[in-house]
Image (cartoon, rainbow, N blue to C red):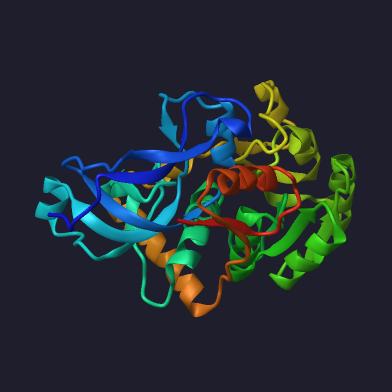
Length: 336
């Protein structure tokens, strides 16, 4: 089942990996859904760090490749299996966390699509979905944040960071947040953080002693670290005994190999989770998405959109410059 679609569309594509100049918005054929897929007409796309990894070649991909891992829009075609299931219909508003999202028409597996609740617009959904689901699953499953915990969130002014700050407060934890500037610290406090610590120009070594001061020398129950290599060693100083380090990003580079004996000093647990492993099927994706959108609709979680960009070659390239510049606070979106 499908509504009428054109034969060609605009898509942000790479034919080789490298610097941002490999990105081109060009005409490509409009896709048709496979049996287990849907196709939706995209309205907004959300920018994520993983887009830069795909473009740079950090993650190996089949080329040519359409960039983007997050978009919101309206269903225009259903594969035979999806149509038979009755779980979606043409005209439904959806969010996708599948690859190939920066295109006017996006084909995606049904399990990677969830309905957008009433009360949440497509721009907000595109800004919230991947980072919101990441933040929510990290705090539900990688380490279950609970009332009375004290937690440390690195790079708290970024998209995932701001969401984790709000979720941590909502779940009853005391939140210590790290940022690079006072302006970002003010933003993080406005989103509920109890304490903010500045690492300035990569002075990450100053963070663990400050965390220990704030916790009477005990450290924190959990650390959520999207920075990676630069903060990893300090995490072992700031973590409490039997604490959990959640390493979920590589903004400063991948964490280097380390001896498992490093965990023994404090009986520390470390996890390196991947969002899609928390949502193996459409039911799990829909359930987590509903919880996220309910939190947004209720006002418990606010989505901070830093900037919106045009769907042009220059516009998409600029998103990757900006997200890696450390000059943004919150989410970047593309109007498709």
